Length: 250
Image (tube, rainbow, N blue to C red; front, side, top):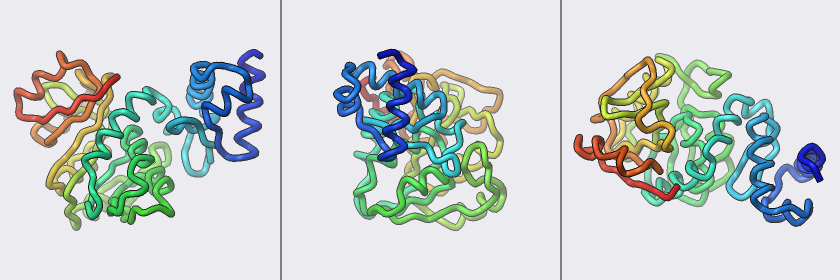
């Protein structure tokens, strides 16, 4: 069976049940689990589904635009490994900040059973954490449709009203020179969340480590800990500047 035929069967199953499981998909289509994962990753990049740990879910275009879905489909295994480790840092009773990064979004699946409060500017995070043990606080402000997140001066003022024990944030790039972003508005939100948190974790896969974009918005001192799958050789400079580094398997 070629990819196009498998694609139609996968999408048909999603229409019926709303989700698919890699192992069951491999059995139904008589293919290997590796092929099933590759098919789901490709369909996610095309914006036709949303990849979850162990399977996929139907995309609701009103909730998760194609641009955001594409980002969540990149480096899925690495992001999940990072987020599992991040979830270990969270305990019942914690109050945490979560920003609108695609890696941060993948943290949701690992914290649904934790009795915590999440303060966030991310609509996908809000949708994902509805109807579970997590209590939600939604940051108010101007909606960025493309990023499915709330930004702007009002959002920053809202954040300033709160304190959190921990913040889990993402960036577009990080190097020994500091933190980098592609958007001034996202940089402002990241900075505001970090300043109102007692301890800030940066979740970034290998592709972000050593990368510098046009906008440097903060020094490494803004964060306390980096959780990443990057090679140890790329992390020595961070440790020398006093940042705690937690590495996970690639």
